[in-house]
Length: 407
Image (tube, rainbow, N blue to C red):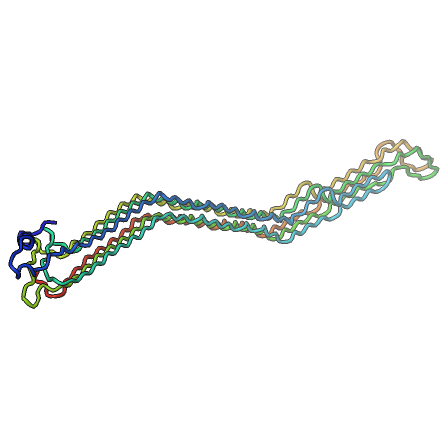
């Protein structure tokens, strides 16, 4: 520290025995300035967060069937030799109840959220206060700072990245419903009559020779099918929500300097020596420095994929094949030559005519209503993505001086 020439002269005068008044002048005692310094450095890495993926698959709805299968029921076969043949096919009836296909299971998938962030909080505070008597010479530096305060902050943050989890949801398909009946080869009738072999006959008088009448009668049975209503199951709903992603840097820097000083610049004699001050007359020097470097945060919201299940099919159709058929077959009897002793009528040829009668059975099918299942609703919400840098820097310097200093 440089001292003024007046102070140096006073010291020399004391050394060579100067005047008594000068000898009573106290030696100047320099007041050392107070120095305060804060340095902060924060370095943060690159956090990364990945939300878990979610997959949900709804179960398939069960199929429902109330259809009947009837094959080869109620058939009749009659074969007669020398007599009548009768065949009546039995009736076939099928009634189906309502069928409800099971609904597909709902599917709900939520992708995991991801959060990657850097957070830094830096707080620095300097406080200085001083007081003293100015009895003597007080010398100050060129810049005249009684206190020197300095704050330095450096914050470096990396590149956080966040990836929200993907969500996939697949609603189950609705079950099929069927009330259709299958009827094949039911209620058929077959009648066959064959003539009996006739031997030669002799008659004395008016004898008549000839065969008897052989009838064949076949009646097919009726076939009836009634189907109930069929309701295909509804497809399951699918709901997928992609995970949210949040990547951010946050920095808060607060710096404060406070300085206060008090002192007397006079004595009972007016001025107690000499006072020298700096060119700018500043009593304190305060400095704040902040540096914040933040990276490029990256956030990717999760994809969402939802597929609603298909509605089940409904079927009430009836299948009927070869039902209620009738076949009657009658063969005439062959006549041998006959001899008569009187008015007999003889001759060779066929006997009396034989009748064949076949009646097919009725076939009736009544189908209920069919309701196909509705497809399941699909709802997909992609995850939100938030990438942000947030920095807050607060700096404050305060200085005040009490005591009537002539500075």
